[in-house]
Image (cartoon, rainbow, N blue to C red):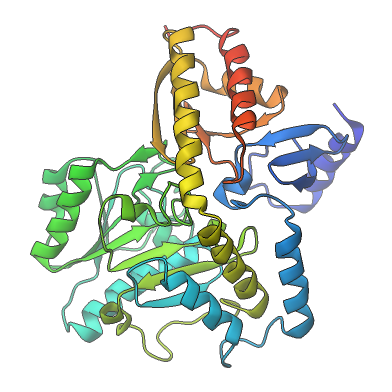
Length: 404
């Protein structure tokens, strides 16, 4: 082990709260689809900062936008009109059916804002005492107290935070009868991810998604879609809900929105936007000059360079390669799933051992639910890079035993 790495680990232990299970890797720099450790060793990045740096790392064009805007205006707060924010809003709203947007700083804040907007719209516009949000098992919506409660997972993520806020109900994934049975007089909205990333790359079946939308219409509920991970061309459409022909009342974005800068957004219909009025919701930093200018350029690049189409093409190629490995290694891969470059390989062998073997071979990815290799590389990834990853996975699978 590198002595500089050991020193960094000890230094962190003396300085930072112990909240992260770090990978055994210190990244000193990154470029494109590659990371470099303290010794300059190169790694192929199939994580992209957890679906954040979708246009790749350290882009010169985005750095130029960042620097130019930083020399003009960084922050004045949302007490003032700011043109970069409006430029971003116009470009972002042109990608979808939403009519209004609220900018914030993260995915958790965006989902928190969506929950607040749904409740306030019901209370102040519809004059109905509805506040409850229904979510799905294994969902992940954030780590604020409200979004944590909305998250349909148990274990360390929720341990020790009781009492959690009231007003949330979680139902089994894929069970429309359970969802129908959970709707009551106090229900305000159903909140879903089109693909559960942290839940193991689980896409919603098309008929299930359609049934959810129908339940919302029949019961006068709002449909909230968490697009924090699935949005911004990741799945092969600009927004994942567009694969399903849905028009959410509210949906959220973050992660890839500013390609590494902290940025989030709540997008909604003009009607639901009536729920927010001056003083009802706010943020000090959200939509500041630098992040808005960079995000506007990100949207421009994604649309102009057809990143959604590229993600779809590369996702098909990755699936084909992975399915070939299923044949070569029977009993070790249970299946593949996902859309575009939000791609999961479910293992039926020792998941942590496979993940570790990939890292040792210079391949960085994520292991979700202890058994699903979650691949969310930059959308600029090349076929040769995907092939290199699959070759490394081929080597690793040859060293592990099938599940008993």
